[in-house]
Length: 156
Length: 204
Image (tube, rainbow over all chains, first blue to last red):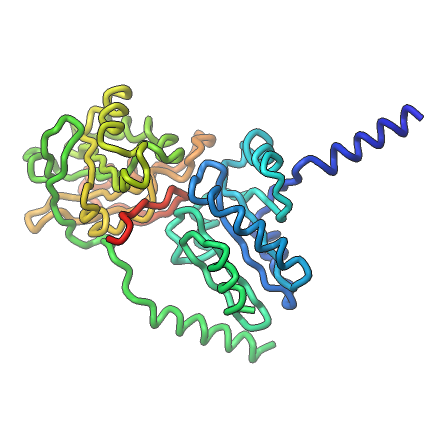
């Protein structure tokens, strides 16, 4: 019985804890490769005020479209050493349910240029991918909820 | 599948072809001089450095954690290169209305607390930041003084290791200035790094 209770709490603990994983570029590209899904990938950081301010829009958008073929991914550009000390606690605190990763990269520059050649590296940035229609656009700007909706409607 | 790839390629080319030219300098351009207010109340222009061979112009600010992460390295750059003819000139590009932490008074405080050995200028109208084409803080422009003006020789990051975690990281700005001091062109002339977006004035 004791073991069962322990397992129960372990399960609850795992379930409740924010799952943020490191993700390298190869795995990101694989993650957004389903041609039947539109991907909206937001690049942000816990220290970036405009990013933090717009995250609820992405969370709300994903929740409102959970039965539609659109997937929001939040990719943090925080330092990789901040996974457990900043990114996970942040996601947990805000109880965000959107799929979240921390960019695992050798250099910022390589990452930035692979995402989009015209991205300066300023945060936030958002990438929309619709492989079926050959759409891949990057925006170095903030998005309101309405703008996110429009972005999806225009590219779905 | 082949058709799709072709379509993608065409789309890609069209996107590149019709993109309007981005504002700001490219390597090889001649940078404009400016007159901006320093934290000591005096006005600073590049021309006021009569003995300079060039300048390390750093767009940075108070509030940005990545600018803060680089602050010591910016201070070191001035200590290393001011005496050799390449002083650091720091400019804060942000609109203090949007970011009170980047106000003139707070800039004065930070410069005094950290004992900056270089000017820390406020770009009140943001005209200089627009002209240079600053996209994020921190963002460095290494200029070489020539008879025909201040020529942009390097644009980008201070090094390739914001976190300062790799002792063998590449010091882009140091390499560029060292090359110029040795009479050569920098080998790496443009780099990128993650940074804080510029807070432009609303309605400007």
